[in-house]
Length: 48
Image (cartoon, rainbow, N blue to C red):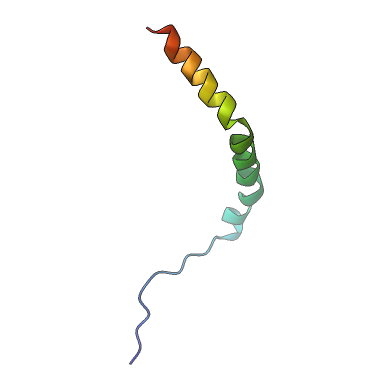
């Protein structure tokens, strides 16, 4: 007897509608990550 260990996941049709918007968000994040980090460092340098 052979057992299947693990879980198979699959997106629903509704979940698949998020592929393009989340891909766009990922692209934005990869493009502007350096700018976001620089802005954070400038903010932190000002102090409380």
